[in-house]
Length: 300
Image (cartoon, rainbow, N blue to C red; front, side, top):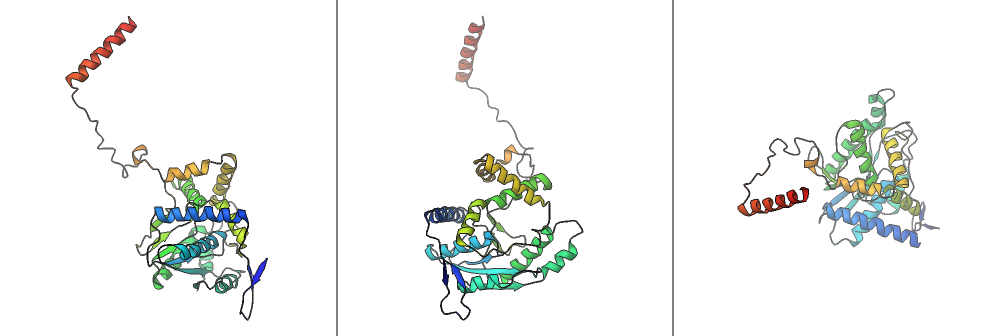
């Protein structure tokens, strides 16, 4: 069922918010997980201006939707502004996001930069576009965040994205690192937050379908075959089917690191390790002698 937008010269149709029990159960679960992530990493503070990077994908739509709900019920005041980077990809439907955001009276900016041409020019033949594309996109969005006075930049990465990045670095980068839920940018000018850090991708897929978000597929990198990240995502999905608790355990491991049980010499001072040797007391020696006598008796 759809509801028309009132008082609009070009009335469009907005999907009605679902009322099913399944929807409210899923919404409650996602809001609880987002709330825990915000609390655990102190993502939002009084007076924050949060720039939500929205691409038109399921993740960013869900992020924006949940943060707008939190804005209404949170005990603190914070602003939410949506920002889309129009990268001038051929065939990109430029009207979908502006219409969606305008019809819902969501403060927003559409930032137009032809990064598509640069990505095509800088990417060697046969290589994937992701590295160059993401670097240019980050630079444009982070710079714009400073222009509008945003105190936080919210990204739509979810739990599965974080784990996929971990395995990408493990398998192909020779390092143990992922995407942290909260990060200070390299130039130290932006605080990046990932409120969906605890949310599983499969729940976001369900939520986006229920809310009927007007999804815009990424045809730039999505059309390329054999992407390493796509292969790792397939691996994670297969694990989730066969071993339902495995992904939760892996993500828990990312939050439970023991530096002394790894091998990074900069993270832990292995060179200075020394055993704490103390002289035994007379009582300890006597006790040891008695235990030794018992052992000798049992062997005789």
